[in-house]
Length: 296
Image (cartoon, rainbow, N blue to C red; front, side):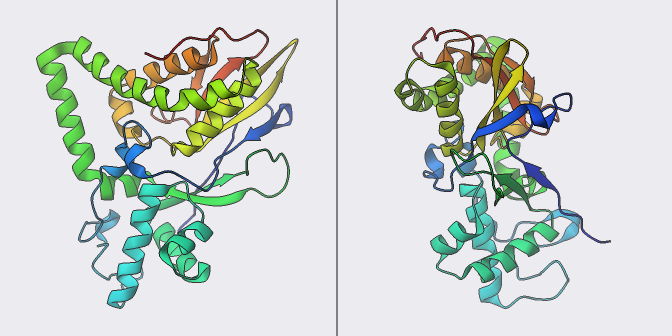
């Protein structure tokens, strides 16, 4: 069966919003911090090495077997595994950045990326450079849901068991407190960039989108003309706890509350990846001055 590559465009608008009414303001930069401090307390770095893990549809990754059924030389297989691991840790990340970090040519890295795309282990996100509103968006790569399942089975399974056990022992209040602590930790890391943007709501939204991008969420912001009031949409094209949030939606609720506190205005969630949305999309009114709320 011929593989059809799925691409996600960031930023995006809900289906009921005309594309002509928006202009992108920020998007994810290529340079990213260590995975140990990104996302919700470094959740992207919890998954182990891909060596020897089973891939989707019965394929084996890390053992030298390509999607075509042919056997790759050991060095090729090792490079493929390293590419996959770095997409896990750094995504969204470009082929050029991967090549620079791995010490390989962009052509060699793209060959492995094409193979991983064919195996549905990664997917493409099209993002614009910060501050640009025109031109061709850059192709950057993140793990797909199948890739997350392949590399993250240990983390996701253990995390689900732990969350369910916490719920059994401590009840909903304990789960909410745990999630709140994780989201508050993320909020404290985002706050300096947002506060440095000043009191203008639009500037704070742009700063928050860029800070989320640095944290590995493929963050961006979009200005939307909505009648007499100008509003913005804060977009996230990637979520490191997407599967957990699907079972425990409090992750999304707490994050929305954290955004409101950082921006100083009431915000409304339009869609989430965890609920099956194309992106996480947060509606932010920009018609009034920010009321700063210190992170807990």
